[in-house]
Amino acid sequence: MLLRTHQEALRVSHHGWLDDRPAFVRPWGFHVSSVTSPALLWHGLDDAFSPVAHTRWPAGRIPGAGLVLVPDAGHFAAQPAQPDVLRRLDGQSAGR
Image (cartoon, rainbow, N blue to C red; front, side, top):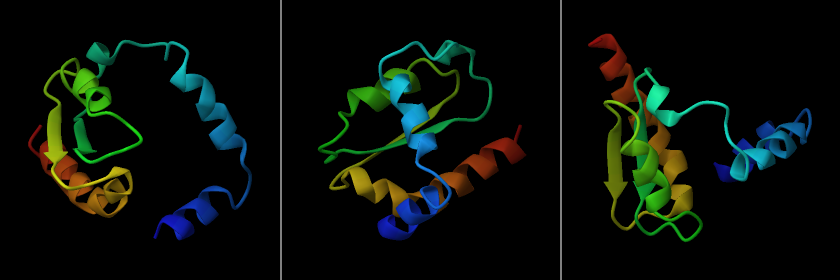
C-alpha cells in the first residue's frame, strides 16, 4: 500500500513534496485554534518518526478536535487507519 501511494504521489512530479518541506520550519499562515472544520487526529504510540506530542499539540488547540492514540501502532500504521478516520470525520460532519 505504501509503495502504491508513493508511486501515485510522484507520478506527475516530486514538486509537491518539495513544496511541503518549508511547512516543517516556517509559520503556516494561520493559527490552528482558528480551524473550524471537523478534525480528528490519529497517532500511533510506537511512531519512531514523529513524537506523540506533535499530535497532542494541535489536538489541544483545534476546537472540538478528536484525538485517537493507538498503542502498538507505528508511523506507517496511519495509512491503513485512514478509512476509519475518514468514516469518523464523515459522521462528525453529518452531525453538524
